[in-house]
Image (cartoon, rainbow, N blue to C red; front, side, top):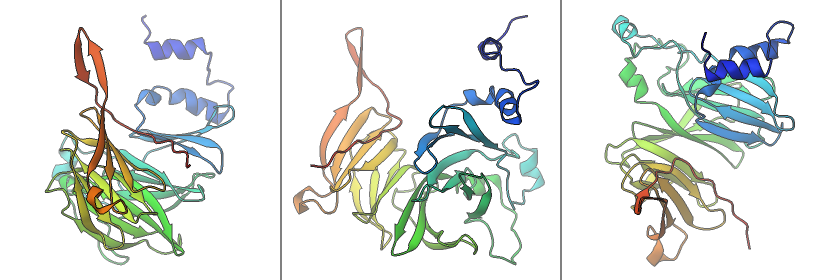
Length: 315
């Protein structure tokens, strides 16, 4: 009988479920799921662990020996009433795809967002669910309206950033329906309150990437057509429109201590933009552009960029 490469790998490493601990058994049982591509990866500084996020599960690895410590999956539709027609369509799923994650500032809690606009907050150490919230969820005591799948997926969260200011802990979420929301996540014992919400910065185009700078008081969002909108965080209104990409903007990062924004896109370009705080003549101007090229048979081809990481050393 022919074996697939993953089965051969498991046999080669002699990972047997019999006689092993529950965690090792779970590791073997889930190996086939782990071939899913990672949506995001991050390092938890408090517990010295690596977090790997895929569309249907989250894995926590020990940062010293690389062993699997936790495996979290089964993110269900919570408090959502679907019509029978939606349940009979091929798009209906009991589990919701995970789309984004971020830590709080002490790196003791992790926020996980899904394709229906729900955010779940977990204790990283114990994996206990602390709370969950969503813009489509009614206030306490109010009935849950019946929502279509299309209405829920319009609220898909494509990015999250944690920000703390004057004792208030906030979570900024960007949604595929061109909307930005800011939530008060200070108190874990009370329902999460939406502080502000705004839309209209991308001319009806979906948001593909988002970042935030507390130092500059700015939020930047990139669309699938290559436009970048810069928002004033305090007023939650657009203050600039940046150009430089022909396809989707996949990564956005502010450079610490400087009024500069770096963007990378599917068109294979990396752009450096000046934003508010720079000399007036340079604000919202693309200062430089780099192209990610590959040479093949005397022909240069742009290679799309999916993520970017900035290393900055102050002078």
